[in-house]
Amino acid sequence: MIPATRIASGGPWEDRYGYSRAVIAGPHVLVSGCTAVVGGEVQHVGDAYNQTITAFGVALDALVKAGASLDDVVRTRMYVVDKADFDAAGDAHGHLFGEVRPACTSVQVAGLVDPRMLVEVEVEAYRP
Image 1 (cartoon, one colour):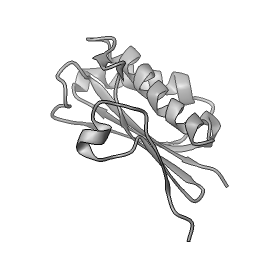
Image 2 (cartoon, one colour):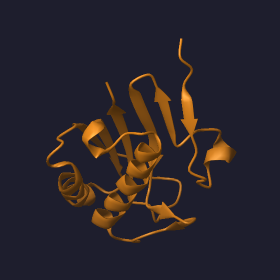
Image 3 (cartoon, one colour):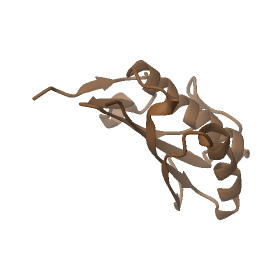
């Protein structure tokens, strides 16, 4: 059995909450939930489209560290706080993944860790 490889990004909650930004398990790369936090600060406050782009950017950076790319993405998930932001988040997803077309789930959630966060995303990739 090949052990899983864990990748850290230095995010503020990884050590405190005990998780990895990404885990490589065989041909799979699983990226934890990512928000628009960069350098410890929430980016694009009030802007769901750009928060989604930024959050997926954090996730895609983890994929690159794992040796994968956007083209390897097979599933995404978007957790959106405000129902009114679904189109903005979906448009951002389409901008990034329109050619890749992964399986996608979007759900409304009651809230995220910081009330300025509008969207959290997850990414799964497969490298045969």
